[in-house]
Amino acid sequence: MPGNARMNDEKEYDVQIKLPIEIEQYERKIYDLKQLIEIGKGLNSTLDYNTLIESILLTCMGQMQLFKAGIFLKKTIGSDAYLLHRNYKGFELDHTVEYGIPVDSKLIAFLEQKLRCYTMEDLAAIFGDDPVMDTLNTIMPMLVVPLLGKGKLNGIIVLGERITGQPFTESEKEYMLNISSLAGIAIQNSYLYEMATTDMMTRLKIHHYFQAALIEERERSVRQKTPLSLIMMDIDHFKKFNDEHGHTCGDEVLKNVANIVMQNVRQIDLAARYGGEEFAVVLPGTTRDDAVIVAERIRISVEKAVVECDAETLGVTISLGVAEFKPTADRDNKSFIERADKALYLSKATGRNRVSFL
Image: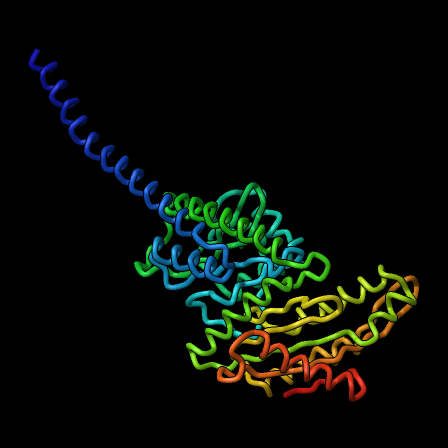
């Protein structure tokens, strides 16, 4: 009987040890769930793309105690690559280089199928020296997290060194996946907002969005005392394309010019279809002289390009006008746009296919 009593005492002792541990684990899970609810609320409180990205990165850094974080996303809805967003934190990279991973790469296909986090060692063991790893090898994150929303890959989160210097535990990787899922839903909502504010033919922003964004940039320019410039541009003799080659060909010309514009501006710039064959580009932190350089680069690129339409090769040119924001004179969007428009009409009046400025 004393033996039975000892066994009962040992069982009771084991229960006394296990119970606090289990309670602590449940409390941790409850805390994590509460944290995830708050994170979800925070991420879904904005539809502004750049604000959302900033929030996602800061959330990851705070929750995981990181020095570095970045996120790869499509620049536009139909992009053929995921690009490292300019708001990345901590990674020492060349700011003039766009770091991208092709949408059709083996890495993207793999991450889309496997819902889990991977260290660089994990991926190196899978892909070896495959060029698909070149971009990640340049950045050298500690953890790669697929950004999924509704079963689709919306991007990739890359996490750098931790403040503690410790590797990620399996429970932390699982927690990071939960954050990633919340971020993926928020980004998908942002994509839906982008679709509502994007001209589907040219993939540029619509007129209404342009007007709202220009107000914000004017206010930011005044607040931060930084320059702001505007480029207005118009396709030369566009009516002739429609009349002689049909509207389908005219659409191809529009898409071609819009694509060239997008290729020649930064992520922080805003390119919009102002109306018809007229486009606008808002250039934050840019003086008139620098904006003229951008405008000239766009003009030359359009002139060099050709549009294939109905077995014909068509040449296209554009006329551009540049104006720099003047806080005392440009009290509203209208006056600012009118000055850039006047410069545009000067280009047309003096022979077209040129850049003018006021």
